[in-house]
Amino acid sequence: MRKYQQVKYIRKKLFWVATFIGGALVSGYLFFENFKTLGQNDKVKNTWLITIVSTIVIIAFFIFENVKIPKQLLPITYSAIAYGLFTKYQADKVEKHLGNNGRFYNWSRIIGVSIIGLMVTLFLLFIGAFISDIIKVFI
Image 1: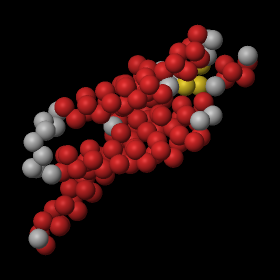
Image 2 (image 1 turned 90 degrees about the horizontal axis):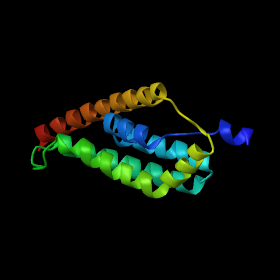
Image 3 (image 1 turned 90 degrees about the vertical axis):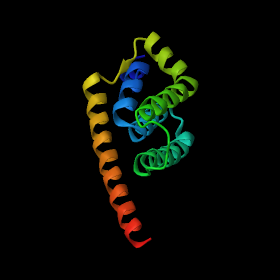
């Protein structure tokens, strides 16, 4: 039982907050951490693939002006989707861990990861906007 308690997961509430702040990259990282802890290494590759594609799509929504979706809805939408996937694939195992007095990552680690993810996403957004401006000059 002692070894089981040393395993750490990300809680549902923290998952939502981290995804909202940090975006798809943070969501993918948190899924990765939980899947790795659960021993479900077969899901890690798909997690990163979905994370990369999602990040590209989110950045494209912010870069291209002809997209008619309100930009304010984007964080709520991707957070809700990620939370739904978390509930479907990981929540029951995390709740079982909680019921066995298991340990979880704390707020400070999750917020730190979220801020780093936000900075990386903003950097990628900046690079994407810069590249799209260069492409517009030549078209």
